[in-house]
Image 1 (cartoon, helix red, strand yellow):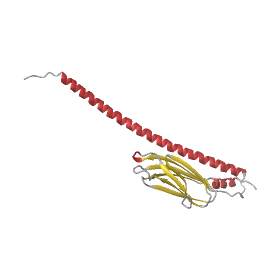
Image 2 (cartoon, rainbow, N blue to C red; image 1 turned 90 degrees about the vertical axis):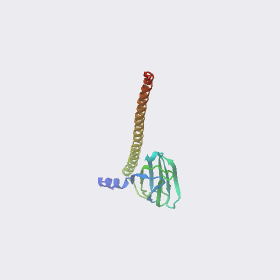
Image 3 (tube, rainbow, N blue to C red; image 1 turned 120 degrees about the vertical axis):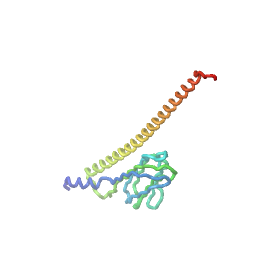
Image 4 (cartoon, rainbow, N blue to C red; image 1 turned 60 degrees about the vertical axis):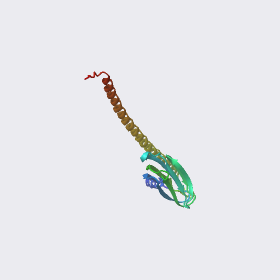
Length: 200
């Protein structure tokens, strides 16, 4: 078999794992569900991170995965981030859901990635170069997931710092107003002790 550059380009397009990145908002008492149609031995990984919350709620979410028969095969409760990988043992629609049903007032902002790789049968011959490309592709996807995680963490930390800075600023202003008010009252009160009152 003669290996041509065009073969490598075509293989790169086919070998790269499928990947999806999303950012959603989930209202209190609601849930969002998605599904992936997998064939036996296809692989899928879901990673998620709660990046914000309105109304002062905790940065957590419920996450669960169900198989094509509706049976829950994985669940995590009240976690700020998580990851789940599966290798499908049967074909069909695998559903994964993010639930904010435990919250009554806080909307959650969630970022999640879905990536995986289609299964290639054992009877298909894979050239060493193709296997290296496949390994590099998986490593690249891990780096991209880590970068996405760091971006979300940076956003959460920045929001926390800005919120803390705003609270400190307003508390300092309130303290300054109280201090000037007390000083003015003390001066007025002490001044009244030294006033000469005329007796008619």
